[in-house]
Length: 311
Image (tube, rainbow, N blue to C red; front, side, top):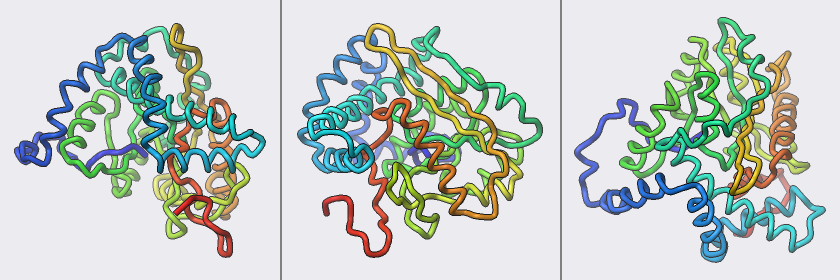
């Protein structure tokens, strides 16, 4: 679920000129400059910013380290720190990749491969819930997918309404519909209309919206809302994953589409949660440090278990 504000009309509001948005206005020229920089400069800027981000974003650093420690317990402290810095780099370069997707999409020409498109093309007269993860590719993943098939996206609103509007306008060229995570009616409607909707059920929203199920061997609060959405819309579920391979000289983007999940949802929500977590975990293991380990995936703990994260 991506982030932005519930500005469904996408219209400019005069309130965006208020002083509270002036900082965002000030940053806009710099963002557009970053968007048109050559790739090798974007890459080097991301590399340059890793150590300062690692030093000053202490809370995110600690969350990332703890996530990697518990999910990859075979790693040494040195390997964990390197992996954590890789996550930070992928987050930073992911920002540039999103800018490229919005403002310089031709950059991706001849840099994209897809596997499994036939699974989407085989679905007739039904909506498709694309089960995916919060990858650091962000909107670049959505854009490269849109080169092969139309898709909508589910997002979480931002607090800054002006920034939200900017993101909304930037994403319009990628997604036909941008659906708030709180607007389940629109989500069901899109699926009933036979749309493919990108949905990432991999964050911890507590047990009011999910059940406990293992994720990398650790019990985690796992969303189950998509089961009801699929039942209401008669949609099918198809796993979707995108990732980057290569280096500064030759980055290449891969889209992996897996077969339709048969007999899903079942009558057992815990079994379904385990099944989805296994799928997402297998996806993440392809490029583990391109996942957003900066989130508190294990915030909710089973009764009697201590917190994984520092207070």
